[in-house]
Length: 297
Image (cartoon, rainbow, N blue to C red; front, side, top):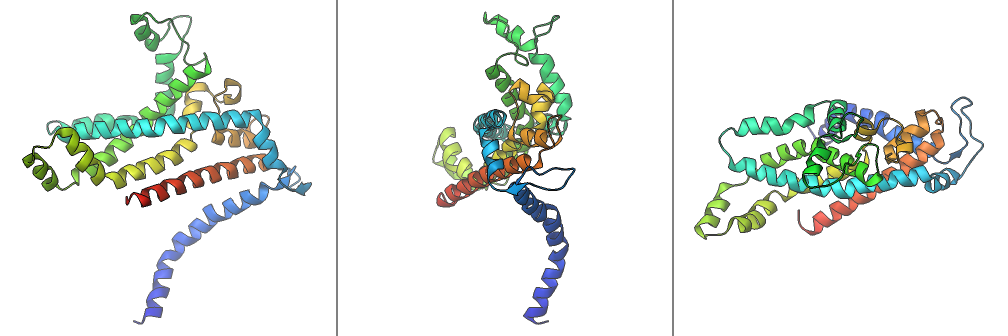
């Protein structure tokens, strides 16, 4: 079999995946890009009054979009580093525990497979102030002499605290599982050599463990950034569907509202917001990849 026939055979094997990607990813992205420049496009008429950058101007000056961007960036900045760090510490602890390790892995992984809405209801019970109860969180705060805080219907910072806490709780199990697998793949010879040299546990952790699993950490950070920018369901689980009035909407939620909410039906605005989100995620992902490449990860 010559080289040309091998190439055709390879393309034949790849054809189904390429077709699916083209139909369900590339074409919709191009379609959204085109919609984002069509002004006053209507679902019913299937027509636009013109083309230009008005949709981007409207979105970038919309107070609801700016609030959604603020909320999304707060989520990204807080949840991605914290969840990765906590997951790393828990993974290291689990890796050092041999007895009942499988049981602990299962317990830590349970939040990942639990229904999002169900977990959101539990968090509402823990943090919401009702006529009958101040919630478990306020019960803990009262021990330290702090007054009751309505984390669900109260000030914005309290709502963001609960949302960040919730997101970390949901994403951390997957990160623990990945990092635990990474730790178990590290060659034990390095640790044996370090113990012979009487290196401290902290030095072993920073000089051996972290560098050896750094590709996995980079993977979790990049996917964490992408996942945090796509947050929407978690906010709905905690604060309901009227996120704009609650001041807790995200960029994805803004796109959804522009398409399907009671005040929606504006595909051009939704497309412009979606393209802005795409450019933000693409830029941050590229920056992460460049930084990791320079570090040799």
